[in-house]
Amino acid sequence: MKFNVTIRKGDAADQTIVMEAPSRFAVYDQVQKDGGVVIKLDEKRKGFTLPAWLSISFSSGVKRIEIIHVAKNISAMINAGLSLSRALSVIERQSGNRRLKIIVTGLSESIKKGSSFHEAVAAYPKVFSELFIAMARAGEESGSLAESLSIVGLQMERSEELVRKIKGAMIYPAIVITAILIVGVLMLIYVVPTLTSTFTSLGVKLPLATQIIVNLSNFMVANVALVFALLVTVVVGGIFFVRSKAGGSFVLMTSLHMPVINEIVRETYAARAARTLSSLLSSGVPVLDALSITKEVVHAGPFAKVVGEAEVRVQKGEPLSTAFAENTNLYPILMGDMLSVGEETGKVAEMLKQIAEFYENDVAEKTKDLSTIIEPVLMLIIGAVVGVFAVSMIGPIYSLSSAF
Image (cartoon, rainbow, N blue to C red; front, top):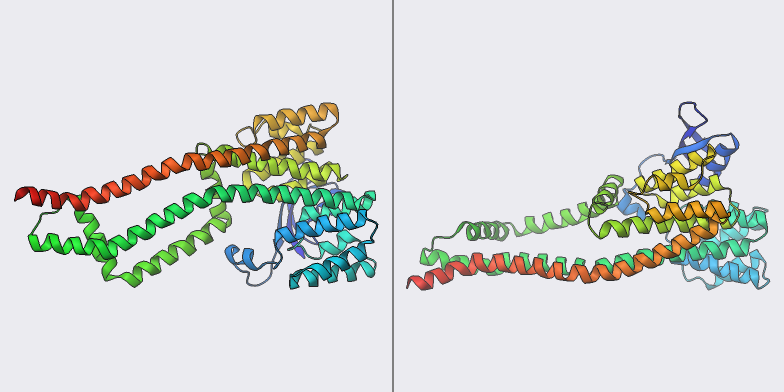
Protein backbone atom coordinates (compact mmCIF):
# COMPACT_ATOMS: atom_id res chain seq x y z
CA MET A 1 0.00 0.00 0.00
CA LYS A 2 1.16 3.54 -0.80
CA PHE A 3 0.44 6.58 1.37
CA ASN A 4 0.74 10.34 0.93
CA VAL A 5 2.38 11.40 4.21
CA THR A 6 2.96 14.91 5.55
CA ILE A 7 5.85 14.81 8.03
CA ARG A 8 7.10 17.39 10.53
CA LYS A 9 10.64 17.21 11.94
CA GLY A 10 11.54 19.71 14.63
CA ASP A 11 11.27 23.32 13.44
CA ALA A 12 11.71 22.41 9.76
CA ALA A 13 8.94 22.98 7.24
CA ASP A 14 6.40 20.21 6.78
CA GLN A 15 7.31 17.75 4.03
CA THR A 16 4.89 15.63 1.98
CA ILE A 17 6.21 12.36 0.58
CA VAL A 18 4.91 9.03 -0.77
CA MET A 19 5.65 5.99 1.43
CA GLU A 20 4.99 2.32 0.79
CA ALA A 21 4.01 0.24 3.84
CA PRO A 22 1.71 -2.68 4.74
CA SER A 23 -0.49 -0.47 6.94
CA ARG A 24 -0.96 3.01 8.39
CA PHE A 25 0.53 1.82 11.66
CA ALA A 26 3.74 0.84 9.87
CA VAL A 27 3.96 4.37 8.42
CA TYR A 28 3.66 5.93 11.88
CA ASP A 29 6.25 3.53 13.22
CA GLN A 30 8.77 4.31 10.47
CA VAL A 31 8.30 8.08 10.69
CA GLN A 32 8.76 8.02 14.46
CA LYS A 33 11.98 5.99 14.09
CA ASP A 34 13.24 8.67 11.69
CA GLY A 35 12.55 11.35 14.32
CA GLY A 36 9.44 12.83 12.73
CA VAL A 37 5.72 13.22 13.43
CA VAL A 38 2.92 12.39 10.98
CA ILE A 39 0.77 15.49 10.43
CA LYS A 40 -1.45 14.10 7.67
CA LEU A 41 -1.84 10.62 6.19
CA ASP A 42 -3.92 9.56 3.18
CA GLU A 43 -3.92 6.28 1.34
CA LYS A 44 -2.84 6.72 -2.28
CA ARG A 45 -5.28 4.95 -4.57
CA LYS A 46 -4.93 4.10 -8.25
CA GLY A 47 -7.64 4.32 -10.87
CA PHE A 48 -11.34 4.73 -10.22
CA THR A 49 -12.61 4.52 -6.68
CA LEU A 50 -16.18 4.16 -5.51
CA PRO A 51 -17.82 7.12 -3.79
CA ALA A 52 -17.92 7.01 0.00
CA TRP A 53 -21.56 6.03 0.26
CA LEU A 54 -20.90 2.94 -1.87
CA SER A 55 -17.49 1.97 -0.54
CA ILE A 56 -18.76 1.96 3.02
CA SER A 57 -21.32 -0.69 2.16
CA PHE A 58 -19.08 -2.99 0.12
CA SER A 59 -15.57 -2.42 1.50
CA SER A 60 -14.96 -5.62 3.47
CA GLY A 61 -18.05 -7.83 3.77
CA VAL A 62 -17.35 -8.28 7.50
CA LYS A 63 -19.42 -6.53 10.15
CA ARG A 64 -17.80 -4.68 13.00
CA ILE A 65 -19.61 -6.86 15.54
CA GLU A 66 -17.98 -9.94 13.95
CA ILE A 67 -14.51 -8.46 14.50
CA ILE A 68 -15.47 -7.81 18.13
CA HIS A 69 -16.40 -11.47 18.51
CA VAL A 70 -13.12 -12.53 16.87
CA ALA A 71 -11.09 -10.45 19.34
CA LYS A 72 -13.00 -11.71 22.37
CA ASN A 73 -13.05 -15.35 21.28
CA ILE A 74 -9.32 -15.46 20.50
CA SER A 75 -8.60 -13.86 23.87
CA ALA A 76 -10.78 -16.39 25.71
CA MET A 77 -9.28 -19.40 23.90
CA ILE A 78 -5.68 -18.26 24.46
CA ASN A 79 -6.46 -17.79 28.16
CA ALA A 80 -7.90 -21.31 28.16
CA GLY A 81 -4.59 -22.68 26.90
CA LEU A 82 -5.22 -23.02 23.16
CA SER A 83 -2.56 -21.92 20.70
CA LEU A 84 -3.25 -18.98 18.39
CA SER A 85 -3.40 -21.28 15.33
CA ARG A 86 -5.90 -23.58 17.07
CA ALA A 87 -8.01 -20.58 18.14
CA LEU A 88 -8.14 -19.28 14.56
CA SER A 89 -9.12 -22.74 13.34
CA VAL A 90 -12.05 -22.84 15.78
CA ILE A 91 -13.22 -19.36 14.70
CA GLU A 92 -12.97 -20.35 11.02
CA ARG A 93 -15.23 -23.40 11.61
CA GLN A 94 -17.74 -21.47 13.74
CA SER A 95 -18.15 -18.44 11.48
CA GLY A 96 -21.15 -18.29 9.17
CA ASN A 97 -19.68 -15.42 7.14
CA ARG A 98 -17.88 -16.78 4.07
CA ARG A 99 -15.74 -13.65 3.72
CA LEU A 100 -14.65 -13.89 7.36
CA LYS A 101 -13.80 -17.59 6.90
CA ILE A 102 -11.48 -16.68 4.02
CA ILE A 103 -9.80 -13.94 6.08
CA VAL A 104 -9.30 -16.16 9.15
CA THR A 105 -7.87 -18.91 6.93
CA GLY A 106 -5.47 -16.34 5.49
CA LEU A 107 -4.42 -15.28 8.99
CA SER A 108 -3.79 -18.89 9.98
CA GLU A 109 -1.69 -19.55 6.88
CA SER A 110 0.37 -16.38 7.42
CA ILE A 111 1.10 -17.38 11.03
CA LYS A 112 2.12 -20.91 9.94
CA LYS A 113 4.60 -19.32 7.53
CA GLY A 114 6.21 -17.41 10.38
CA SER A 115 4.38 -14.09 10.41
CA SER A 116 3.34 -12.54 13.71
CA PHE A 117 -0.36 -12.05 14.42
CA HIS A 118 -0.22 -8.26 14.02
CA GLU A 119 1.59 -8.63 10.68
CA ALA A 120 -1.08 -11.07 9.53
CA VAL A 121 -4.01 -8.81 10.42
CA ALA A 122 -2.22 -5.77 8.93
CA ALA A 123 -2.65 -7.44 5.53
CA TYR A 124 -6.42 -6.77 5.85
CA PRO A 125 -6.63 -3.00 6.57
CA LYS A 126 -10.28 -2.77 5.47
CA VAL A 127 -11.26 -5.39 8.04
CA PHE A 128 -8.93 -4.80 10.99
CA SER A 129 -8.52 -1.19 12.12
CA GLU A 130 -5.27 0.54 13.02
CA LEU A 131 -6.33 0.22 16.65
CA PHE A 132 -6.73 -3.55 16.36
CA ILE A 133 -3.33 -3.92 14.64
CA ALA A 134 -1.58 -1.73 17.21
CA MET A 135 -3.12 -3.58 20.15
CA ALA A 136 -2.18 -6.94 18.64
CA ARG A 137 1.39 -5.78 18.16
CA ALA A 138 1.64 -4.42 21.70
CA GLY A 139 0.20 -7.65 23.09
CA GLU A 140 2.67 -9.81 21.20
CA GLU A 141 5.65 -7.68 22.19
CA SER A 142 4.65 -7.73 25.86
CA GLY A 143 3.58 -11.38 25.91
CA SER A 144 -0.02 -10.50 26.77
CA LEU A 145 -1.86 -10.93 23.48
CA ALA A 146 -4.96 -12.34 25.16
CA GLU A 147 -5.28 -9.32 27.44
CA SER A 148 -4.70 -6.87 24.58
CA LEU A 149 -7.34 -8.53 22.40
CA SER A 150 -9.76 -8.51 25.33
CA ILE A 151 -9.17 -4.78 25.77
CA VAL A 152 -9.59 -3.96 22.08
CA GLY A 153 -12.73 -6.11 21.94
CA LEU A 154 -14.19 -4.20 24.89
CA GLN A 155 -13.17 -0.86 23.36
CA MET A 156 -14.83 -1.69 20.05
CA GLU A 157 -17.92 -3.04 21.81
CA ARG A 158 -18.36 0.12 23.90
CA SER A 159 -17.87 2.29 20.83
CA GLU A 160 -20.40 0.27 18.85
CA GLU A 161 -22.89 0.40 21.73
CA LEU A 162 -22.55 4.17 21.96
CA VAL A 163 -23.17 4.63 18.24
CA ARG A 164 -26.13 2.25 18.40
CA LYS A 165 -27.77 4.26 21.21
CA ILE A 166 -27.33 7.53 19.32
CA LYS A 167 -28.81 6.01 16.16
CA GLY A 168 -31.65 4.56 18.21
CA ALA A 169 -32.54 8.02 19.51
CA MET A 170 -32.75 9.27 15.92
CA ILE A 171 -35.05 6.52 14.62
CA TYR A 172 -38.28 7.94 16.09
CA PRO A 173 -37.94 11.48 14.68
CA ALA A 174 -36.76 10.06 11.33
CA ILE A 175 -39.88 7.87 11.07
CA VAL A 176 -42.21 10.75 12.03
CA ILE A 177 -40.63 13.20 9.57
CA THR A 178 -40.74 10.60 6.79
CA ALA A 179 -44.41 9.91 7.53
CA ILE A 180 -45.20 13.65 7.42
CA LEU A 181 -43.52 14.00 4.03
CA ILE A 182 -45.30 10.96 2.57
CA VAL A 183 -48.73 12.06 3.85
CA GLY A 184 -48.08 15.60 2.61
CA VAL A 185 -47.20 14.42 -0.91
CA LEU A 186 -50.23 12.11 -1.05
CA MET A 187 -52.57 14.91 0.07
CA LEU A 188 -51.16 17.30 -2.53
CA ILE A 189 -51.63 14.70 -5.28
CA TYR A 190 -55.01 13.20 -4.31
CA VAL A 191 -56.88 15.45 -1.82
CA VAL A 192 -56.08 19.01 -2.88
CA PRO A 193 -57.19 18.53 -6.54
CA THR A 194 -60.70 17.59 -5.31
CA LEU A 195 -60.95 20.78 -3.26
CA THR A 196 -59.45 22.82 -6.11
CA SER A 197 -62.15 21.63 -8.54
CA THR A 198 -64.80 22.70 -5.98
CA PHE A 199 -63.27 26.18 -5.63
CA THR A 200 -63.05 26.54 -9.42
CA SER A 201 -66.66 25.51 -10.05
CA LEU A 202 -67.92 27.99 -7.43
CA GLY A 203 -65.63 30.81 -8.56
CA VAL A 204 -64.11 31.31 -5.10
CA LYS A 205 -61.29 33.87 -4.83
CA LEU A 206 -58.43 32.07 -3.12
CA PRO A 207 -56.13 33.60 -0.46
CA LEU A 208 -52.38 33.67 -1.19
CA ALA A 209 -51.58 30.67 1.06
CA THR A 210 -54.31 28.58 -0.56
CA GLN A 211 -53.19 29.60 -4.05
CA ILE A 212 -49.60 28.51 -3.29
CA ILE A 213 -50.79 25.06 -2.14
CA VAL A 214 -53.06 24.72 -5.19
CA ASN A 215 -50.26 25.67 -7.59
CA LEU A 216 -47.90 23.20 -5.91
CA SER A 217 -50.58 20.49 -6.13
CA ASN A 218 -51.22 21.21 -9.83
CA PHE A 219 -47.51 20.95 -10.58
CA MET A 220 -47.17 17.64 -8.72
CA VAL A 221 -50.25 16.12 -10.40
CA ALA A 222 -48.98 17.14 -13.84
CA ASN A 223 -45.45 15.89 -13.15
CA VAL A 224 -45.82 12.86 -10.87
CA ALA A 225 -42.88 10.97 -12.40
CA LEU A 226 -40.64 14.05 -12.17
CA VAL A 227 -41.63 14.65 -8.53
CA PHE A 228 -40.79 11.09 -7.49
CA ALA A 229 -37.54 11.24 -9.48
CA LEU A 230 -36.64 14.44 -7.65
CA LEU A 231 -37.46 12.84 -4.29
CA VAL A 232 -35.20 9.87 -5.07
CA THR A 233 -32.45 12.22 -6.24
CA VAL A 234 -32.71 14.30 -3.08
CA VAL A 235 -32.59 11.20 -0.83
CA VAL A 236 -29.65 9.58 -2.65
CA GLY A 237 -27.87 12.93 -2.97
CA GLY A 238 -28.42 13.60 0.72
CA ILE A 239 -26.92 10.22 1.68
CA PHE A 240 -23.96 10.80 -0.64
CA PHE A 241 -23.41 14.32 0.75
CA VAL A 242 -23.60 13.27 4.41
CA ARG A 243 -21.16 10.40 3.87
CA SER A 244 -18.72 12.55 1.92
CA LYS A 245 -15.89 14.38 3.68
CA ALA A 246 -17.38 17.82 3.02
CA GLY A 247 -20.88 16.70 4.02
CA GLY A 248 -19.66 15.02 7.18
CA SER A 249 -17.78 18.17 8.18
CA PHE A 250 -20.88 20.29 7.50
CA VAL A 251 -23.12 18.03 9.60
CA LEU A 252 -20.54 17.96 12.41
CA MET A 253 -20.12 21.74 12.53
CA THR A 254 -23.90 22.22 12.38
CA SER A 255 -24.36 19.75 15.26
CA LEU A 256 -21.80 21.66 17.35
CA HIS A 257 -24.01 24.76 17.15
CA MET A 258 -27.28 23.06 18.11
CA PRO A 259 -28.52 23.10 21.74
CA VAL A 260 -28.44 19.71 23.51
CA ILE A 261 -27.04 18.01 20.39
CA ASN A 262 -23.68 19.80 20.72
CA GLU A 263 -23.09 18.33 24.19
CA ILE A 264 -23.85 14.81 22.96
CA VAL A 265 -21.44 15.24 20.03
CA ARG A 266 -18.62 16.62 22.19
CA GLU A 267 -18.99 13.91 24.81
CA THR A 268 -19.24 11.16 22.18
CA TYR A 269 -15.89 12.12 20.66
CA ALA A 270 -14.36 12.65 24.10
CA ALA A 271 -15.42 9.11 25.07
CA ARG A 272 -14.05 7.69 21.80
CA ALA A 273 -10.69 9.45 22.17
CA ALA A 274 -10.33 8.58 25.86
CA ARG A 275 -11.34 4.92 25.41
CA THR A 276 -8.97 4.42 22.44
CA LEU A 277 -6.02 6.16 24.11
CA SER A 278 -6.60 4.29 27.37
CA SER A 279 -6.71 0.93 25.57
CA LEU A 280 -3.47 1.62 23.71
CA LEU A 281 -1.53 2.98 26.68
CA SER A 282 -2.67 0.18 29.00
CA SER A 283 -1.39 -2.35 26.44
CA GLY A 284 2.04 -0.76 26.38
CA VAL A 285 1.85 1.19 23.12
CA PRO A 286 4.20 4.22 23.22
CA VAL A 287 2.34 7.48 23.84
CA LEU A 288 3.23 9.04 20.46
CA ASP A 289 2.09 5.95 18.57
CA ALA A 290 -1.04 5.85 20.72
CA LEU A 291 -1.87 9.46 19.89
CA SER A 292 -1.25 8.88 16.17
CA ILE A 293 -3.63 5.92 16.13
CA THR A 294 -6.20 7.72 18.28
CA LYS A 295 -6.18 10.59 15.79
CA GLU A 296 -7.13 8.12 13.04
CA VAL A 297 -9.82 6.47 15.17
CA VAL A 298 -11.41 9.79 16.18
CA HIS A 299 -11.36 10.74 12.48
CA ALA A 300 -13.65 13.81 12.75
CA GLY A 301 -11.69 16.85 11.55
CA PRO A 302 -11.62 19.31 14.49
CA PHE A 303 -11.54 16.60 17.17
CA ALA A 304 -8.76 14.67 15.43
CA LYS A 305 -6.84 17.93 15.00
CA VAL A 306 -6.73 18.40 18.78
CA VAL A 307 -5.33 14.88 19.21
CA GLY A 308 -2.74 15.65 16.55
CA GLU A 309 -1.84 18.84 18.40
CA ALA A 310 -1.42 16.84 21.60
CA GLU A 311 0.94 14.49 19.73
CA VAL A 312 3.15 17.39 18.60
CA ARG A 313 3.19 18.92 22.09
CA VAL A 314 4.07 15.64 23.80
CA GLN A 315 6.97 15.22 21.41
CA LYS A 316 8.18 18.66 22.52
CA GLY A 317 7.98 17.58 26.17
CA GLU A 318 4.70 19.29 27.10
CA PRO A 319 1.97 17.53 29.14
CA LEU A 320 -0.63 15.47 27.29
CA SER A 321 -3.45 17.39 28.96
CA THR A 322 -2.42 20.79 27.57
CA ALA A 323 -3.97 20.48 24.12
CA PHE A 324 -7.28 19.20 25.53
CA ALA A 325 -7.39 21.88 28.24
CA GLU A 326 -6.94 24.61 25.61
CA ASN A 327 -9.74 23.30 23.36
CA THR A 328 -12.71 23.21 25.71
CA ASN A 329 -14.98 24.29 22.84
CA LEU A 330 -14.54 20.74 21.51
CA TYR A 331 -13.47 18.51 24.40
CA PRO A 332 -15.26 19.03 27.75
CA ILE A 333 -13.34 20.83 30.52
CA LEU A 334 -13.43 17.70 32.68
CA MET A 335 -11.29 15.78 30.19
CA GLY A 336 -8.36 18.19 30.42
CA ASP A 337 -8.61 18.40 34.22
CA MET A 338 -8.76 14.63 34.77
CA LEU A 339 -5.90 14.06 32.32
CA SER A 340 -3.82 16.55 34.29
CA VAL A 341 -4.57 14.64 37.50
CA GLY A 342 -3.66 11.38 35.77
CA GLU A 343 -0.30 12.81 34.71
CA GLU A 344 0.41 14.02 38.24
CA THR A 345 -0.39 10.61 39.75
CA GLY A 346 1.16 8.54 36.95
CA LYS A 347 -2.16 6.87 36.13
CA VAL A 348 -2.99 8.36 32.74
CA ALA A 349 -4.42 5.15 31.23
CA GLU A 350 -6.63 4.50 34.25
CA MET A 351 -7.85 8.11 34.30
CA LEU A 352 -8.64 7.98 30.57
CA LYS A 353 -10.68 4.83 31.16
CA GLN A 354 -12.69 6.63 33.86
CA ILE A 355 -13.23 9.58 31.50
CA ALA A 356 -14.48 7.23 28.77
CA GLU A 357 -16.88 5.42 31.11
CA PHE A 358 -18.22 8.70 32.51
CA TYR A 359 -18.97 10.19 29.08
CA GLU A 360 -20.30 6.94 27.65
CA ASN A 361 -22.82 6.73 30.49
CA ASP A 362 -23.63 10.44 30.19
CA VAL A 363 -24.26 10.19 26.45
CA ALA A 364 -26.49 7.16 27.01
CA GLU A 365 -28.61 9.16 29.48
CA LYS A 366 -28.73 12.23 27.25
CA THR A 367 -29.86 10.22 24.24
CA LYS A 368 -32.78 8.97 26.34
CA ASP A 369 -33.59 12.56 27.31
CA LEU A 370 -33.24 13.60 23.67
CA SER A 371 -36.17 11.39 22.69
CA THR A 372 -38.26 13.09 25.38
CA ILE A 373 -37.26 16.52 24.09
CA ILE A 374 -37.78 15.72 20.42
CA GLU A 375 -41.29 14.31 20.88
CA PRO A 376 -43.06 17.60 21.80
CA VAL A 377 -41.03 19.45 19.15
CA LEU A 378 -42.27 17.00 16.53
CA MET A 379 -45.83 17.41 17.78
CA LEU A 380 -45.52 21.18 17.35
CA ILE A 381 -44.19 20.72 13.81
CA ILE A 382 -47.04 18.34 12.94
CA GLY A 383 -49.56 20.74 14.48
CA ALA A 384 -48.14 23.67 12.50
CA VAL A 385 -48.25 21.74 9.21
CA VAL A 386 -51.81 20.54 9.81
CA GLY A 387 -52.85 24.01 10.94
CA VAL A 388 -51.46 25.73 7.85
CA PHE A 389 -53.13 23.18 5.58
CA ALA A 390 -56.45 23.45 7.42
CA VAL A 391 -56.54 27.24 7.39
CA SER A 392 -55.44 27.41 3.75
CA MET A 393 -57.83 24.81 2.35
CA ILE A 394 -60.79 24.81 4.70
CA GLY A 395 -60.84 28.59 5.26
CA PRO A 396 -62.23 29.39 1.79
CA ILE A 397 -64.97 26.79 2.29
CA TYR A 398 -66.11 28.47 5.51
CA SER A 399 -66.03 31.92 3.91
CA LEU A 400 -68.08 30.54 1.02
CA SER A 401 -70.72 29.03 3.32
CA SER A 402 -71.00 32.25 5.35
CA ALA A 403 -71.66 34.22 2.14
CA PHE A 404 -74.85 32.23 1.63
